[in-house]
Length: 541
Image (spheres, rainbow, N blue to C red):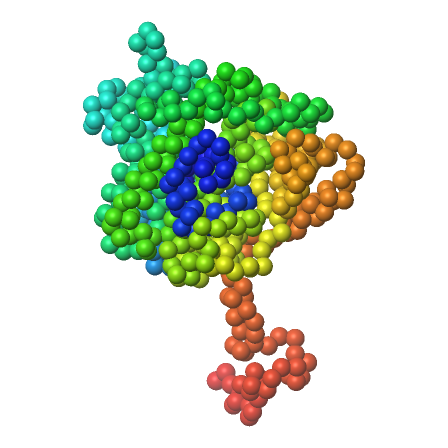
């Protein structure tokens, strides 16, 4: 998983300037899914859906820092039941439900408690990046292993991530922090081999070298997520001639949906509406991706050299995209494709997948589909009363399974300044996307009108058709789909359908026979214990 990697910033996805031969190498060995969507376009909520295989409104961790409640089953639980270890290497954005753990007496030092605190993973190494360094001091609750690595390499200071990995040197010899977009064109003041992406690749190879049992590894890279600064030689591989015009239109500002309007007026949007920002940031973003691709090549070469490629399934994806100034926005958050659509490339080494190698699939895929895919690949039984996604293995085998008619994404913006600006209660700060492959509906709680785009006629998503009345039928149809999804059976997670089928008639066979008139309503074998000669009456003597 590459944090904040856009679906269209890969060579195999058609980017005109960015060559990614190693992403393309995996695509040539597997299937590239061209319509893959996250369940929320924000890091924490999206990742919790990847890890639980459940929609955001099912698992409840709807924003960064919202704890995933104790007891929510995760990929680690499902994979261990299938006989496979499940490890974390890198970033998760997981926030532990400390109150829930305390209530249940779960110590974070115990195996169960540690897994609950780490989203079900066994941790090989965790580092979430973004080690702030402000006037209140340096907050390092989990003690960054990357910072410790930098210190071991001689990088000075309490927080070398901030001083070296996230900073260049300005013309006067001072710190040029990556927090400022103006510095995005400067090389980070760090040896490339010591920067975050090569560091995590090396840790991944260390992990694989020590494994002796079947494993699933979540290798979660911090980049190309901001801060947008990258070490030499990647900092100047791309220039102004590689920066596309922003995909935006003045019509988007006219009678804009109130939530969309609020986002177009926030700080990050104001920055990316400035062309000088885009001209510095986008080459750095491309450089970060190029470094990620090169490091993927290191990992693939290692797998090939050691013979492990033939029995290792590889999935390349992201937790959301990045607007980069498109639609007058920066970051992610809303439901335009640059934000909510992700790369999804799956390589399955088994012969059953030979027929689809090097192909694309345009089925509507959701991020929650990976968890059941991994369980099935491990030979386990998919707990479909818990996992709300669907295994992708049929597509990899060249089959045409009965598939979903629409993709869903959710966004809870209650902690944001946009919620404050709109004067909304937290319960009303919720957005829903329904996309049927052509029409994309955004519903906003709080009494707002919807938004609607026709991606066949308007692939850039400029023209909000819900501003008029001519597409009422499409809006009504997608609202019916949203209501259908809202009625899904999402919380009956302690009994599977097979369990319930096995319960049918069980109490009767145990002799619990209420509401009988004369016993003829049920098979004779169920009443035979209650027929025959009476027992001797007990007199009480």
